[in-house]
Length: 493
Image (cartoon, rainbow, N blue to C red):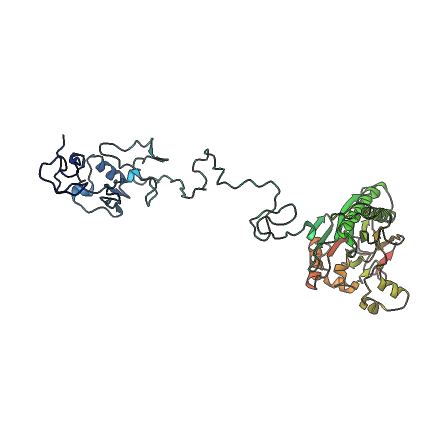
């Protein structure tokens, strides 16, 4: 039986005690229950943890407290616990091994337990309440690599350290459905089906606001522009094989009439339909010019059908030629077997720009517009007509309320390589003449059609971007006819 140390006052009521008292005469406190004061304070050495553990368990050690030497550099002295708390009860003393966490080197705090207990083996786990901490491993040999310490965080929503442990569903964000888009404004919220961010409410760019496509030797770019709230242009590019196996390249560009209802639907329906008809007719051996005529007629019928179907906002147009029905313009080009075929209705245009810029460029279409009619009738010159505010009023279009449909088609046989520019007025308003179009078209357009289409769209945007801008480029390659081939470089077929 160990000897009881001498107290001068009762630990409970602080009543003075006499020598040999076993109980307090004032409050009856059992003085034998008071443990003797420790000889020293528990110490955890950062670089000598095992020596400190052995000393606390009573094992022989050369610890500084036993030898009288100064504590090694880096030792941590734990503060003495207060003797009493606010309830006048002696405060418990927590040893390092009873506290969860890591020291400054990343080693788990463990080993100092109640007197007479050895630290847990290195292969066991020491339990502290709700925490499971690995017991300290034996010191590594000199020069051995230090074992990696797992990353520990104190945030309740952190990923569990054990990969097999399931994450807390209360702290893990819900899974995002595949294909959900992030908001372009806040980059945090998800875009709802109505096109607005669920987080910040920002309207998202529509899919048609900017479109690009490159297919073999044809490319197209369409942009909403800087003033319109939506893109009402549409395009289609494709290629087909003629009966002899030679390729036929197709480009269709349509411009929705903004004053009509659902112009974006009209342009999309017309471009898709015309492209499908050409893809079906050309492999059968139909002449490209005849196929182009049939494609425009079919595109007009597709736009007419829109007037008989309710629109997005619930419009119910009459089955007959309704007033202000969906409408658009159309221009298309086919390059096949050394032949260039153009077809159009409205004021969307096609230009020819030779690779050799010493040759003259040309405009291949005539507008169905008020200005073109004034020039054709000899009432105004071109500069005066296109300066008039009525210049862009179109006299031909695809739609249920259009006048009698008169598709325009033309065939050409260029005698040298060049590029066909097929575009809406959103581009040619900023490069109206063939010479202006040739100046803004990059010299390497035949080899880089997509890049060149982007350049043309950028030219329109830099000029103000007042309208939707759409352009398709078709390189036309023919063998050179010799240096002496002058004269007309683009002749009708």
